[in-house]
Image 1 (cartoon, helix red, strand yellow):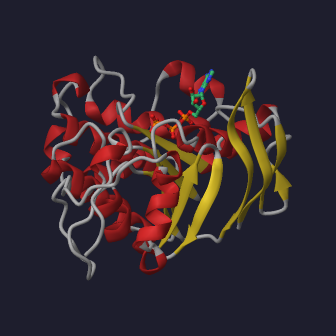
Image 2 (cartoon, rainbow, N blue to C red):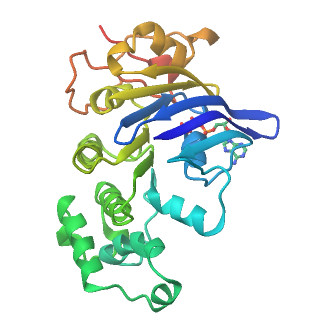
Length: 281
Ligand SMILES: Nc1ncnc2c1ncn2[C@@H]1O[C@H](COP(=O)(O)OP(=O)(O)OP(=O)(O)O)[C@@H](O)[C@H]1O
């Protein structure tokens, strides 16, 4: 269980995340949605301590991770793999080595300095690539891969960390619909088969509905919706995407065309285009 209590982050006078209280049981797949600037990335980055909270507590398995440092912090960051919109691979290294970098926090410094990976680690890396359908790229330089392939390499690297949680910060925002679907299917599969908690920021509502059992909606740093997709009514969508500011919500469909495995009509909300929000029928 991951528990956030009154978690707040200020940047100068700006409150990016404002008194967030959420508990996430192990194995849940959670989508975080909201307009640009709502605080989604800051929330994710605080969970794995890329950013420190200004106030509040983040607790996992009895440990207050918002307070730890040194080895304990490195262990936590190993348990909490991060996936980014821009993949964050080392482009000049081959794919296999990029995946093996996920092992670094499991090894001692000498082995890391020598850059020696065991046969078992290499086999594990290949298996992760195989699982993501890109084993044939293992010896290619990562920078030569398509965006969708690079994101799958990043997921394979995350798997090599043997994480408890995967935090994905807009993992499909740079991808075309087909690659977006492959990446989301991979995250869902990892969540379901390995029991790894997945918390992902998404900027299309249809994706969150299709893949996430729980949706957290943020508006101006606060959690304004927390529940299953089935409870995400038009009013809740308006609250998350800011009709309070008088923004007109149109019925125009801005779907990414990811397959709709849910019962609603195509729904999509681009967080950067609040005037083009499409609502369910
Ligand atoms: N390092 C920083 N320094 C100052 N302000 C920041 C910093 N990081 C984020 N902010 C501010 O905090 C607020 C929340 O930003 P955040 O990136 O978390 O939002 P977001 O919902 O992830 O947006 P987007 O969908 O555009 O990525 C914004 O007002 C942003 O300008």
